Amino acid sequence: MSPRFAFLTCLVLALLLPACSRTDERTVLRFWGMGREGEVVAELITQFEREHPDIRVDVQQLPWTAAHEKLLTAFAGDALPDVCQLGNTWLAEFAVLGALEPLDDAIAQSRVVDRDDFFAAAWDTNVVDGRVYGIPWYLDTRVLFYRKDLLARAGFAAPPRDWDEWRRAMAAVKQLAGADAYAVLLPLDEFEPLLQLALQQDEPLLVDSGTRANFRNPGFRRAFAFYVGMFRENWAPRMSDTQISNVWNEFARGFNAFYITGPWNIGEFKRRLPAELQQSWGTAPLPGIDGRGGGVAGGTSLAVFRSSRHSQAAWQLVEFLSRPEQQLRLHALTGDLPPRRSAWRDPALAGDEYAQAFRVQFEQARPAPAVAEWERIAIAMQLAAERVVRGGMDSEEALRRLDGEVDAILEKRRWMHARTVAR
Image (cartoon, rainbow, N blue to C red; front, side, top):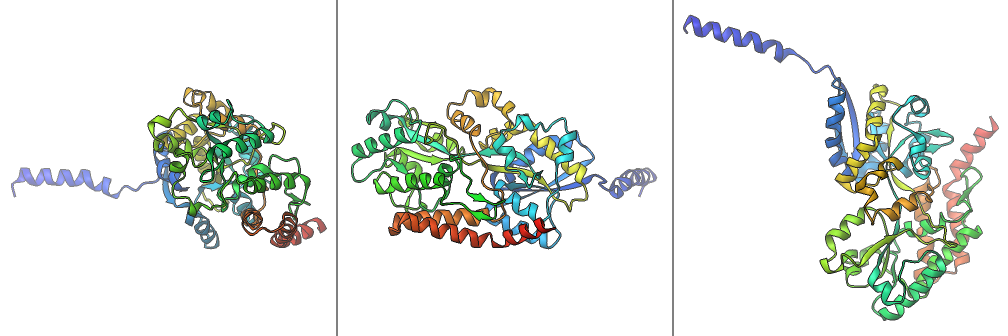
């Protein structure tokens, strides 16, 4: 080896060795995202890491079908991430477990998270026992998707605004449709349509601090009767999701003129309906019994786990993803709708005729009861309705049994509440 070559070799090694021994000293945050959001959130986080060069975010994407079990397993094994996207109906459960960091103090000091800018229904889904445990990331509710042409053929120039108009429209559409088509599609294995109608009522579904069922109240009786009546009048088919081959194809061929669904279907309808029908469908807020519509406020929120060793950095990530401009980027990537009013001033949403029905309904929506047992309760409610529709059970008996089943589900909650009050 020549002296010159040996010198150059030593020089290169001298320059490389310090680089090889250098370690990444950045704070590492673990973020768990669900479904499509978990796939695209890395595109948003790239900018966050540029703004915070001392923080690196590791993203793990979880399928919705496995996410709940994964979170509970991680809680039991002390292996939760720092920040997580949580379905709104899961927040109460993890708050009761003591897994979530209360965010009230951080919100009070934040220049980014402005409570008044969020739709009230979105914000309220994150409040459990008076404390805030999450920041809304995106919001959804279910509105009417409808066929303008079929409605016009039945003599209606505009979508229904209240239940009476909706009844008349469904009766007229069914009369024209004949035996093999219907006015509205309400899959019997979905609890959301009935819940939407129930949350339009003034009476709560649970009482006594969420420890007792209240499904025999006058409001729920009205909603239940209206829902069941759509099947009894043969306006809706007695079918579940598994019996419907393709909801978009059925809607296109006129099998149903109304469909209650969420914002994710705006993009699907644009992609899947044939070109000749693209001007023949629209969206409208869900009709209410007296013209006041509304429904459930769904979606997901961003939560910080109490076990995080980097809670300050975790909150910085939550603040970043909560910015209106980042929520608009999420909308562009996924179709998810922002929970902040200021984001809706952007032309991408302000000029979207299909999204406006959701914007109106967000102002009227309500959160589902904030109890850890809610998902089990919602399924019990759906099964009660299915017993009446499919099995011919008397509605009064179905509601009596539903109250009993839900009271049994809430038994432990009553016990815990009684101990808390006794202290």
